[in-house]
Each structure stands twice: as C-alpha cells, then as structure tokens.
Image (cartoon, rainbow, N blue to C red; front, side):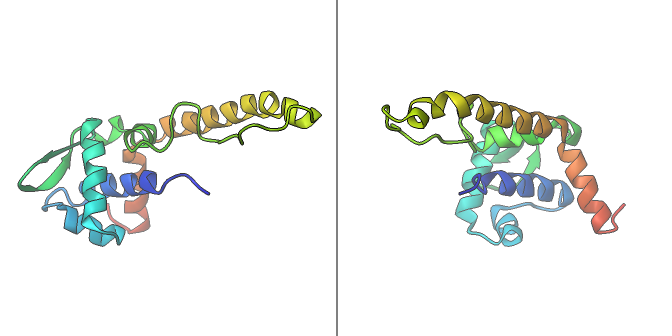
Amino acid sequence: MSISSRFAVGIHILTLIEFNKEGVTSSEFLASSVNTNPVVIRKLMGMLKKSGLIEVHPGIAGAKLAKELSDITLFDVYKAVNVVQENELFSIHESPHPDCPVGRNIHNTIEPLFTAAQLAMEKVLRSVTLEDVVKDVATKENIS
C-alpha cells in the first residue's frame, strides 16, 4: 500500500500547466502526459481549483496557476488532493487482543512514532515549492 497517486499526479498537473502556460492546457492534454483518463484529470483539477491552486472555467478549455510558483508548496498540493486526513498517514490495525501485553500496548507505543513521521514528512513538503519542481524538470530537459 502507498500514498495515493493523486499527490504525484497533482504535482504533474501543476508542473505541466506551468510548462505549457503559452498553450491551452486542457484535461485531454494533461491526461496524455499523465497517461490516464481525462476524467481523472478533471476530478483532480476540481480539487486543485477548490484549494485555490489553479483557475479553470467550465466550457473553456485550459487551466492556469492561480498563484506564483514560489507560493505553491508540495504540502499545498498534498492537502488539496486529499491524500490523507490529519495524522492518519499510517493506519493502525483495529482491536488488538487486550490480554496480550503487545496487543494491550502497541497502539500507545507506535501512534506517537507514526504521528512524528507524518509531521516530519509534511515539514519537508512545506519546504519544497512548485518552483523547485519546475526548475528541476527544466534542468533535466536542458530548458532555461
């Protein structure tokens, strides 16, 4: 099991919108790059719009970023596409046996560790902007 691919696809969408800002970035265009169905892209674009990250207008093909690249963090994307709920990145199994010393204590032992790990990951995501992603892709493609 892994974090939903919505997060990676959300970053992909925003990055491609920036790279194609002179063109029309339709859901079909985005879907061809992601290699998925345009319906999936439209659903994610709705989430990104609701979070104020992109501007789209029904009936008009295309999307554009609603903020500067440097003002969009990966944490913003992570939250926009509903990857996980607050402090629920890691699931803990239900109802361990209370008569077992491990079963009795495992939740209280690992839950703070899981919370700390999620907070650490989210701290990293807050420190990386879409501008960082765009610059890295441009460097890899030798685009200035």
